[in-house]
Image (cartoon, rainbow, N blue to C red; front, top):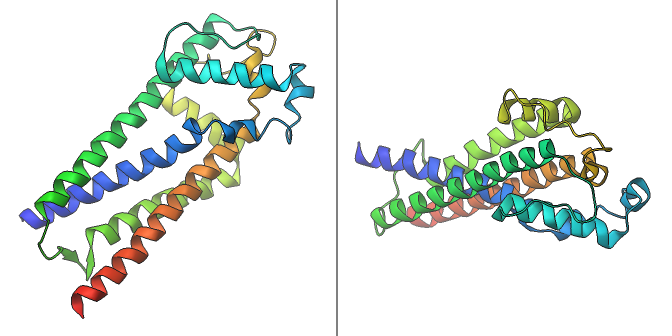
Length: 216
């Protein structure tokens, strides 16, 4: 019973950690956004220079991550826009908290199981199954998102910002939307799924090899 409980705790902990990390990387790695400026002609679309666009994005992201005074460089913004980014910041911090809890769970269960033969279900360890569960979940979400990303994007906002409409931006009030095209968010979703697939497939392959060595 104890081994089975640790199995589920370690599985859930790893799923939480890898999902949080996969989401955080595109958020924290700012050059990922910068790489969209020229291909999507954001200078021409907004009328602002590349440096102004970077400054506006950095100001917005700094506010989401660290709080403080809200600004978007030289671009106009509204109170509704600021309130939406406050909500976005809460989601960012929730992601980091989930990742921290997941990491703590991985470390604790790893210390408890240290030196012991891994508990298996149908011949596979929790490391294998947590990789499979996470992979299946995100592949399903990836397929749903790829069928109609615009609809998926709207559904995402309705789920995570229930009862609010301030996520619908108007360029004459919040100019930051001119440099945040839907394609950028689509590419963020693709990057998240890609990172997660790489991490989970690596885990599955590594764990299968480790189990073979133990059985040899």
